[in-house]
Image (cartoon, rainbow, N blue to C red; front, side, top):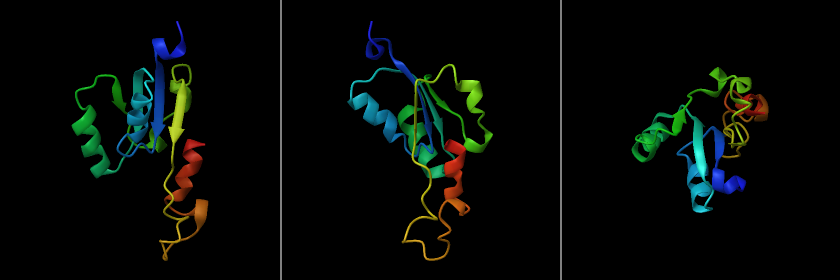
Amino acid sequence: MTENEKGINVLSLFDGISCAKLALERASVKINKYYSSEIDKSALKIQEHHYGADTNFIQLGDIRNINGLDLADEIDLVVFGSPCTNLSSINPVDRRGLEGSESRLFYEGY
């Protein structure tokens, strides 16, 4: 049995509206468990709408409260796109890069 036939467990950090899950499904990757880390209220409402009844969709909440070692033996794939607020030229107020209040969350995923 191939990996794709038996499925994988995914951890998606800064998951947003769970586009990684959608992309993997569209690529015909079988997902056994999908762990999501997200705190944005609007994104969480969209996740709930699409995956609220899916018992294999597990919302972990704030990345700062996750101990990666607790999941290390179970996760096959980690995906993340950390906040770029303090990196973006669109933000004229706080452009401290990875040391900014939001973009420094990159180090939590790393």
